[in-house]
Length: 93
Image 1: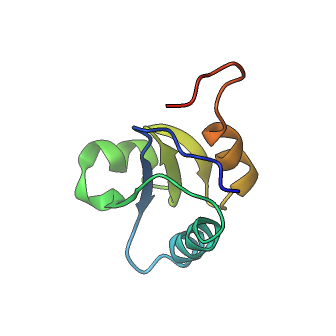
Image 2: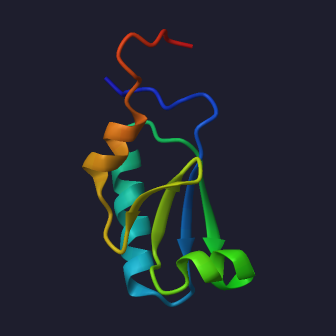
Image 3: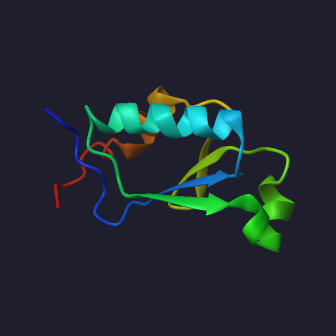
């Protein structure tokens, strides 16, 4: 059984072209997505936005869930799944 993602949840992978860690994190997210329903994933080039570059320039890849950092450098599937889990007592949508 797949845990449902929040209705408005959005994943963003802040990355950079030709970044081995970024490519690895993307592969690991895709692998998890084959067994668990994940929110839509948006890929963003850190160098395309001065604010992103200032905030995350040396720390790519960065996985964000609705703008909140899930993990940096290495994919943390357990943390992502923990953050996607509905709060206790929350009613299903």
